[in-house]
Image (cartoon, rainbow, N blue to C red; front, side):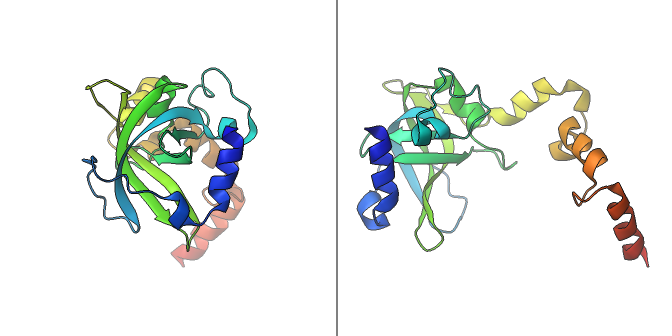
Length: 189
């Protein structure tokens, strides 16, 4: 049934899907185009589960894109961002709540002209019925714990060993180190 609701929600015009969830929101504006503060209750799930029915117990252990099946209308809301300015996703913040009913506060983006419907930036989350909010900013802490050898002052993406390995194997342009070398040589001329 939830897959049918998700499919119907995607097919409906935005004016029929979107409700105003701003009344109780305390979300901080990021001055994003089409942003609306939004506070709502939802069940935490992962996107593959919502779309295909492939639903591991742990929502993919933080390795899948996460989302929220909104209680008010059954619409699947894609949680693409957490509350940090490092442009990280929300999987680390939502995965511990997999399968649970929660309340979230953040920014909802709805722009049918560009196809962005029910895209969400989570700023804080709590278990439904709780009064204690958790800020949605776990990504950096989790990354630092996973890669202690990458400590330093540069931005995380310049220190991440996975990114460094990709660059070593495929170059900065993704076309191989030889192409990079030729490109860099051209730029110096």
